[in-house]
Image 1 (cartoon, helix red, strand yellow):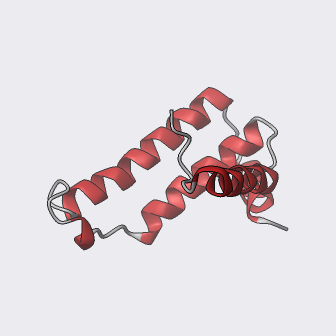
Image 2: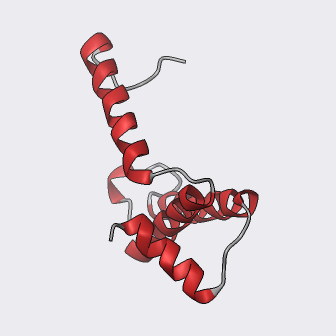
Length: 101
């Protein structure tokens, strides 16, 4: 059982299935909490090496992402593999993983 399956089983077991729009909003909220920790711990970017992020905040964001993947029937592992391949190709072509857009 992979992580996405574990999240799906948890959601099912606790009856907390939600529509994709709610899952996407929850993900945005959780990533916002991570950003808040980064902002505060880095003194609003003045000390970027001092960033502290609690593992539970990252766990909340990961849960929200995997729940969203499940709600839109996207295999998170396959999506990650596709993204890694895309970044690898960009690195080989341009020397940067950025899209340049």
